[in-house]
Length: 281
Image (cartoon, rainbow, N blue to C red; front, side, top):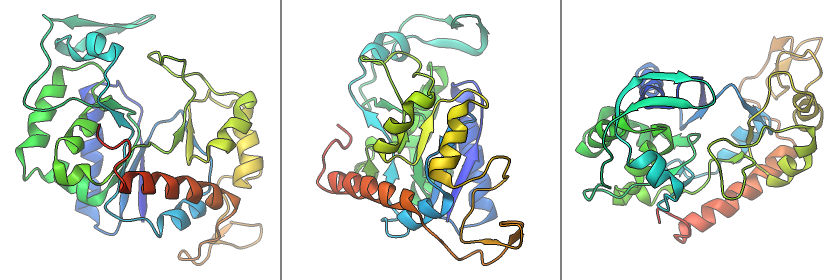
């Protein structure tokens, strides 16, 4: 089973605490799941739930899909070194303005990594960061409390500084995101002109989109087989007349073309991770 959590919040320590809180609730309620996927309101699926379940049915349950790099680039000066005295004191106009203290040097006790704030976390890794039988998750949580855009570094730094867990990392967030080169703070907003690129990426999700943009209807039509005004994406569980008006066999999965695209991508990524390519470096 794969669990998804939707959240929209300030991309600082609050977002990390919300993510960890959601993970903790999930662990308390049930252990019958394998991956935790965090998504925002500006994400949209490029495959059906059946495609996603079918693809991950053969994937090693210990793997974590976390896009990461130790090459900090402009983030070293702009995000890593500034010390945020109070993350709650900020205002929004063209940019966030924080109460920033003196700059700090890079840590020597652990190596910093950065990457996407969107990821697919295994249950074993979620247990590690939530139950905290090791000091590393707690130490890094305190470090990233005073960090700009900490969701882009906390989970990457935790997993890549723990040798056994580092072996489980797949360097991808399974998203299609259009960036400038070199990347700026925010990605491009996707439109209908990006449809072919999204399909060619074979990704499970894409971001970011404007509310009710026409490209979402195109994704529904081409990729999700979802009719306009239909509340649910059709799947093997659908029953009744009209279609999907009732819940039938919840264990029935009917994968479509999206499963072939996603399976190709996931297979390639997991093989690269198996041989240590682009993994925690």
